[in-house]
Length: 429
Ligand code: AMP
Image (cartoon, rainbow, N blue to C red):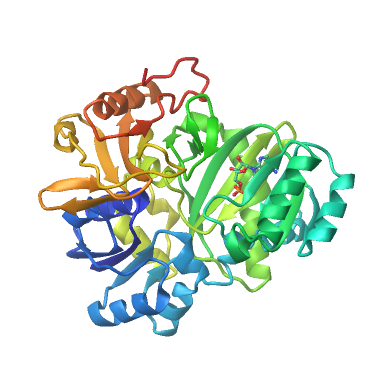
């Protein structure tokens, strides 16, 4: 099998690492890839969101299977373009990807199918109407830009003044681009968050192991939101009764609702949940694996991912083929200093090769590139130290031991990944 992976972050490095373990795979390409992926695949300089160029690339190299990492190519219709040509691809169509591409579409879908979610006050495309609606809401209020906004489109407004300022910035001053021209106002939910991701071929589905990520940049969940500073996975995150509830009240009604509406969904579907006192409720859908959740998930995979994804593309998923390691896993993300604000790049990364002796540890690179014989930083999130262990503690211990070997100017990582799992102490200190 020859496989093309689209994307160039830690998630894609993790996918390539796992796919490569399959005896069936003889060749890998990655578009655009990164410094770490270049060790395992032939990287091609095509932007992940550029569907016409990706089609031209596939025309030339003819992969047997294409696996899409990020949301942008999906929202831009890559699966539709590939399906028209009968090329095997894992990822939903443009229409199905609207579950992530439009928060208003996804909220209305949830409401139509009585799937538990935060109550919506309203959806607005005129700033005047949005301001007027602020008189009849409870605080704090969640404001969501409708379209893709690179993780900056959700705002928790403590009061009317803050809400007004955010609305003005996105709806009138165009700060987030066209994605911010329509907004959704909804109630704030309280509880612990959980990522529940499934893989489906449109008919059958199989859940991935549960994960939790850490979005804020600093320890103790402080500082601005980021793309993700770390994640962990343990079966203890989701007791069996809660798992049954998530499946019967959320996952199955979602897949049934999509099928009823004539929107068959194929690929990974990420369900972001808030575990509230009244039960699990949907915060968001993503049309792909999360990053860094993917790194923690692939670390626990005990099956041939290439074979399973080829089955998904052929609409022949057999959920019994997916087996999982009982162990816990963790991913600690290293960022450039200053991220998610301004940061410098081009810093040499030292110590990557020191890490290999640590059993059960893998380093998945994200914002890196190769310059002569060095790996240097090229983005905000630089790499994810990923480890597996018999307990979450053991996995964290290995990950932080390996993390201590890595060095680059200005680097930052959180020392308290996994601390929300009921532990009081940050393991990385
Ligand atoms: P989203 O992109 O919709 O997942 O939102 C990003 C983050 O905002 C989520 O992971 C939550 O931490 C937070 N969030 C979104 N919606 C709500 C809500 N209704 N109540 C509380 N937090 C929320």
